Length: 402
Picture 1: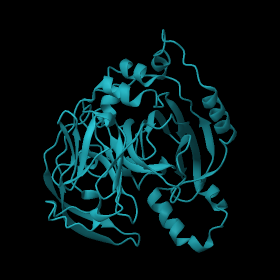
Picture 2 (picture 1 turned 30 degrees about the vertical axis):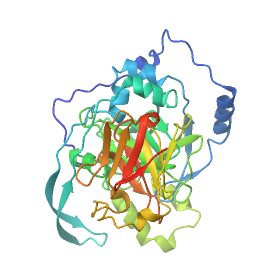
Picture 3 (picture 1 turned 180 degrees about the vertical axis):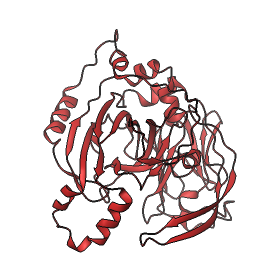
């Protein structure tokens, strides 16, 4: 595992006991009949089996509930909640840079081989999150009641969830008194595709209804407690269940490392019971956590003269081209190296200020993923976007207006 952390980390942890008293003196939240009915439905279905990344049944654990106001939580954490998710807390602006990589890898056949390549990291710019803007854009549409479950020696605690029908952002921590080893992460991983599963760990975890990039707060994390934010794209039912009224986090602990387990499953593919019953002999512990989510954030549509559409929310945007944008000569548009998700994107506000999302050398996206064969994509922002104050969105010199 690659822990690139300072020895004198300032750990801004908050205990469950402290959190329980955050709302002291604050008017109790009253749930709507619609919410209570939805919660009852969730509880009744909490034991339904799901499928993990390895195609294995996972037993369900307890459900979480939406309780504390995110703004009470944000105030109690000195404004860190929103600034960690969409600001510059724990994040620093970086200039574009190139690194040269020499690696020795071991294939599944046990043979080792060397790889040599270079990676160009684009510049990234962060801005401080405005709590008043966050309150107006997010409202109470965020799950902020911490809830935990433990698999093996790892305790997973969900701290907040927010989504917009296109993407999901989840903040959580992983704690293990013997050391958190289920993730491999570094500052460079944060700049690129995020933390990855450690193949030498026996623990696997993830979310069923969404997947994307795991950003690790290295400033706060220690060897025994790691703080994560997952910037994810919602599933559409093709590769995983669609996100409706709950998000599912799962975790599994096997009797061997994930590297050895995947090798075993591959070698014994033809001999495994089709009903998955062999899994009982390979797993030590497994759980799911059902997390009811708040209502989706508001979205707004922008179109160009050809009818191509962008749907944007305060946290992400989806671009689904339908006409000329794919056949237009990109070089004539001043963007010869743009394709699919690497289109030049700028959001211009009504006061003339701009948010440069991407331009080839600057990448201010938290995560991006293609939307299938239509060459569209969904991108999560690295800051909050005031959708009511957008004058236009420009992609490859084409303007999209409301």
